[in-house]
Length: 96
Figure 1 (cartoon, one colour):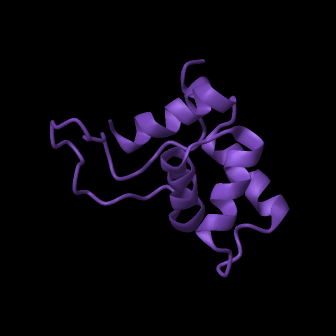
Figure 2 (cartoon, rainbow, N blue to C red):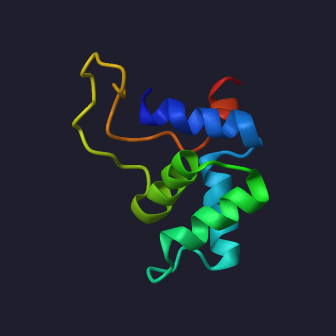
């Protein structure tokens, strides 16, 4: 599954886009560089019932923004992404 599809699945489960998670994390002070990943993972599990894998994907975008490695871009494999830039505006906004 591509990273983008993973983010889209999180949105389907929670109703929140990646950008909405970023805004919520900012409100909680979780975008500070010193915030530990486990703190964010616990918040996402407690408030949104996200498992560790999905929560770690959110942690990644909080720490790295919309850029991913080109390792799987256009690889044709199961984890193939279309580009190195993730769409953080959400699937619901792309489907309009």
